[in-house]
Image (cartoon, rainbow, N blue to C red):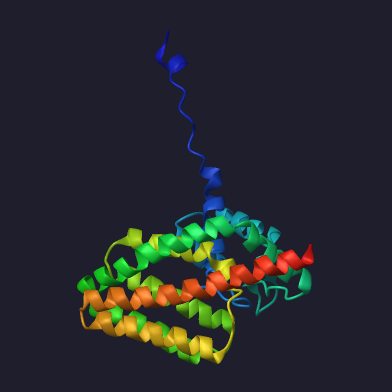
Length: 249
């Protein structure tokens, strides 16, 4: 039997590049790294960022538009903008139900985060460079100046990613990005108050101080306290949702 009759390789699916691009942008939107109402980079800029052709970018944007994640505006001030999330009761209820359906998965993510992030902070304290500290301080400043909840949560996410990047291990940053994206729904249900924000900010300050002091033990402990506090809030939200769902039946 001839070799070409026995071997069946699959062609590389170059046409799926647009799905990869769409997924990357979708994750940034989910993580609030691109805020509602904010414009995406231009098609030309996206082409350079992803290293793909313009048709690939256009197909990716169509996917995102189909999912109501972005909208295109024409004219001099036009472009592609992240859609403003609807705040009506039906959307809120769908968010709650989606969170309830994923409760077991969320529990697993919380356990993973509680195991991983404190250790990452310890490694960051040992390996961090000056530019890592600058990045962390920039995100803390953004949190202190944020005027909307999406902006606040975007800087919160960026702070955690900056700590992970300070380890010098890109896998840690990817893992934290994945966890944050998967927890986005339930995090968005946490209370929006000055007291809650102040608590998170103070915990972040303690993490930064330990990383800056090159104290792995203190950095691990500070992140552990922060993650434990966040977990407590998320688990409280899950319990409220469970009871809410029980009353709806």
